[in-house]
Amino acid sequence: MVFIDGSNFYHGLRKNIGKADIDFSRLAAAISGKRKFVRTHYYNAPLDQQADPAKYSKQQRFFDRLRNTPNLKLILVRLQKRMIEGKLVYVVKGDDIHLATDMIVLASKNAYDTAVLVSGDGDFVPAVRAVQEMGKRVENYYFKSGHSWHLRQTCDNSVLMDKDFIMKCI
Image 1: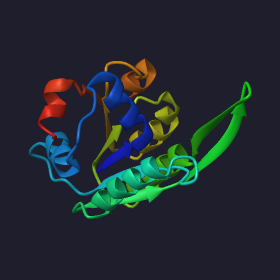
Image 2: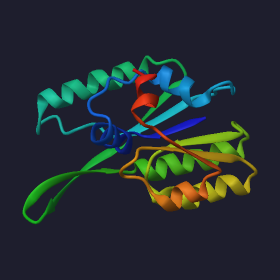
Image 3: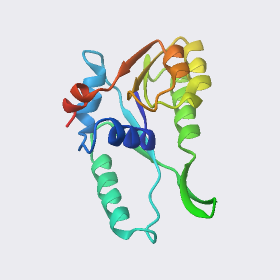
Image 4: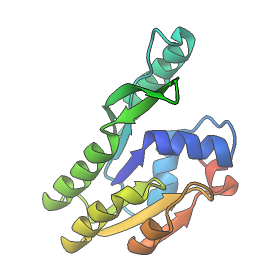
């Protein structure tokens, strides 16, 4: 089962590969290889429509594409406005906790044998350990920059998503 931290994936993709139109069915196939693929869970937050209607509309089309992707569940959380040093900043809230909870609950229900975490966020280490304590494997797929060494060391396997890997998913 694949768990994608959507914001982390998007920013990692843009920073490390550039703009790419990912086919999430191909991504799941590249990650799964010959193993039985169960489902992808993708976590993100809708943008503020008033702040940038065009960007919001583009994101909604992307979400519609995800909703129509076989064996993919889109989980939307909230976007919170914050003032940091006098500048309005938007922060995705709730994605990590939803992802971690789903990983643990689905492991406890024996829904998968291997969780594939697509994120570079070290905050997932406690969830990874909890899943491993249930006898499940956890693999980490990450980009070269913006990854957590601690997360990579905790997971049973770690795979770098370089340009060659991503090109198979476009």
